[in-house]
Each structure stands twice: as structure tokens, then as C-alpha cells.
Amino acid sequence: MRIPIIAGNWKMYKTEEEAFQLASELQKRLKDVNGVKVILCPPFTSLSSVRKAIENSLILLGAQNMHWEEKGAYTGEISPHMLLTAGCKHVIIGHSERRSYFSETDEFVNLKVKSALKFDLSPIICVGEKLDQREANKTEEVVEIQVKGAFKNLSAQEAEKTIIAYEPVWAIGTGRTATPAQANEVHTFIRELLSSEFGKQCADKINILYGGSVKPENSKELLGMPEIDGALVGGASLDAEFFEKIVRNAIES
Ligand code: PEP
Image 1 (tube, rainbow, N blue to C red):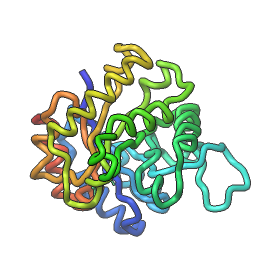
Image 2 (cartoon, rainbow, N blue to C red):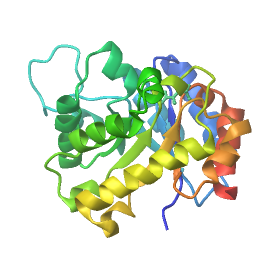
Image 3 (cartoon, rainbow, N blue to C red):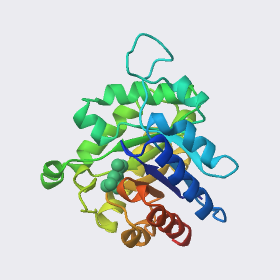
């Protein structure tokens, strides 16, 4: 049995103070919640304030990106060791916004995934097709290349510590959502792919989250699908009431 995971990707929103307020509010609202793993991924500048707001709670801290090196002359970058010592347990890797605006390739994603695991961070690996690729019936082909690229040279023991987020690019921040059946179909494909690469036992341990305009209204149906093990939430994670509802829907589904 996989415990559902609801992760909030706050993207480039919230000052340190605003992040503290939102995380404190969530900590209060989600006090009684169990049976679901909640992860908050604020910007780097707010990791410390969110860490303070969620201490003594079950909410976990995550980052949105990292470099693969432990340290070095990489101006503007953040290392996995820095994230670990800042209290992070998770890190989002290969988000489509990083792939498209910052030219992140599958090779970079693979380096980052391996490095995150080495530093005891569980990566949330994002994959997903663009609209023209879906329309050309290339969804599985694209997702297979991304999954195989991200997991290259990983052992099954390493692979089972990861989380995958299937995020169709055309559904991110657009208000368009994949239908529960469309998402479940791709999740099933990813699980089969993981099973053929690492064996069924390993594949069954990996949570596959859906991401793309998840809101309280559509979350129940999406999270109720057998292969959808949680959600990576962007816009709606910036609103405490919406995010709480999505978390509670994950428990009920
Ligand atoms: C995301 O940023 O990963 C995301 C899914 O965003 P949104 O929920 O806003 O579509």
C-alpha cells in the first residue's frame, strides 16, 4: 500500500514572511491529518522560515531544484548538501518550467537524481508531454524517454526512494486538467515501465503523483484513480483552504 503524497510547489511566490504565514496556517489546519504525506516546497529563501513553521508537525520540507555537485564555483546554485542541512527531505527535479525555461535535459535530471539520492534527499522527478506531443500520439514515447533518462544507472534500491510526478505540460498552470482516465492511463504506463526496468516489487513502492491544475474540485476524482498516488500542486498550494481540501480529499479517496 502506497501512502498518498500531496506536495505543494510554491514556485517563485511568497517572501520569507508570507511563506512563514502560509506554512503556519497549514500546520494548524492539518494538525489532525494522518494517512497522507504532505510536502511543502517553497523558494530557497523561505526554506528556513517554513522549516520553523512546520517543526513539531508531520509536514515535510522540500526544495524546487538543486545542483548535482556538493560544492564548488557554481554562482547562483544550491547544493544537495545545503538542502539537506536546511532540513529538506525532498527536492523537485526536472520540473517542466526548468526544462523549458532553463534548458534542463534528461542528462541533467539524471545527474541531479543520483546526487539527491546520495545526499539522502528523495527526488520528486517530473515528466510529461507537451500539447503537440499528445496530439501527435507521442505521450508514451516522450514519457518513456524522460523516465529512462532520469533513472539511468540507478539500482532498484535507489529507484524505490524516488517519487514521480506525471505532469502533462499543457495542464500546468493553464486550468486544463487531464481527465482522471487520461492521467491514470499514463500512470499505468509509467508503472509498467518501472516494473520492466527494476522489477514489480520496486515499481509498486514508487508513488506516482499527478500534477496539472489540481484543485479541490477535481482532486477527489483524480486521487480516486487506482494508479494516482497523490498530487503535485502548483497554484492551489498557495491557498491554505484549497490545499487543505486537496489533502483531505487524498485521505478520503
Ligand atoms: C506544478 O507547478 O507542478 C503544477 C502542477 O502547477 P499547477 O497546479 O498550477 O498547474
